[in-house]
Length: 298
Image 1 (cartoon, rainbow, N blue to C red):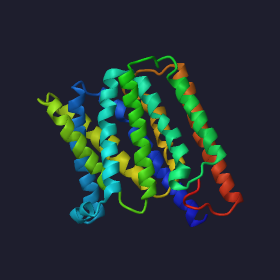
Image 2 (cartoon, helix red, strand yellow):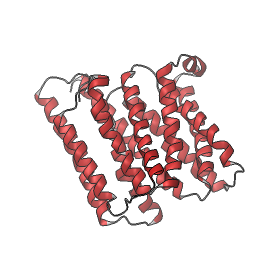
Image 3 (cartoon, rainbow, N blue to C red):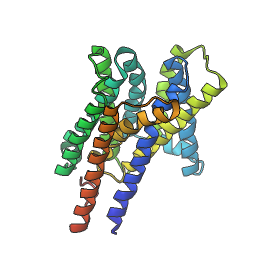
């Protein structure tokens, strides 16, 4: 196996673990009963600590020089991510949860459409088919739950999709740089904005522990792995992380709280997984038949 192919497989592994970490959000949120703003504030506090720990270890304590060297791409990704964190809570207050999750997957189409003009990364036919198949799977999963909802909530959900697409494109465009500081910026911004609405804190010790896990696993670890994966995977492939999140989120809630998903959820999940797996397998076959793919290929 060539080094280029090993890099692609390594990036795919990072992206898969990132998607699994993202998907735990519903489980941790369902484990607490405090105000959503308190969840954001505490989650961001622990996420910030988690990122600082990661940077401290990876940089051997030289964190400040890395932060000072961060340019506008890191700041832009941090702001976009912070907005996504806050808009997620706001959208839940104005529209249905199913609407939010389904509309967030629109980010896959946004990235696919912009990958060529922005990054010069063409989208292979198999990837387009996998994206369309996956979106059909999302539609099946939430067919019985998606409703009109509120216009404001639906627009907020679409803004989350735009934020995800923006951070993906920027992280891929500047993939030779370090994007981990962007996670710290996002945690600080979202945490400070939500703090006035979160006071006074009412969480129990157990709930603080669950929100700490939410910040460390679903935010700090997930985003750090995602930005690492951006160094190795083309944007149209990287964005499949959103679909992994959509598949496994209801599974963790089912295992943790006994909320059995409906038949359509299982069917939709199978369609998504089959689309993603089919795209990966066809990609491997084409790599073996042809020359090693360039790092910007799809």
